[in-house]
Length: 120
Image (cartoon, one colour):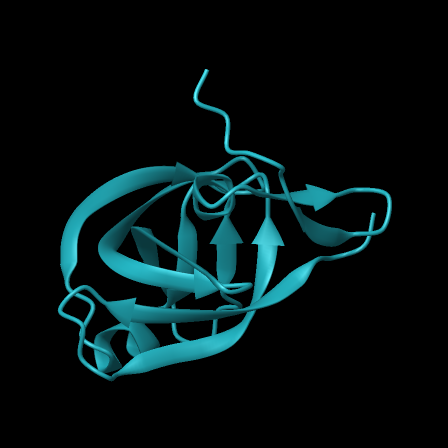
């Protein structure tokens, strides 16, 4: 299966004009989104906690996270963004996707909107 990417904009919850906009890798295996720590700090995202995450290689590592506004495909949501090492490829996690009713279409590796967001 190929990679799915989408242009995503991260802003702080205070609503000022600073933003980090980049092409994010869509990762349905990742719960939370992730971006380089230097970029998050530049736009004023504050660390509010730490969480242990299991990486793709099976190892477990603790990362700080902050809360941010996340925009992609004309939709806006908010959620956790992990502070990754500078230079790390940003990831858009499944929580952000599902919260606005978007899923990955595995047949053509694109994002598509669900007809409705499930509440059941």
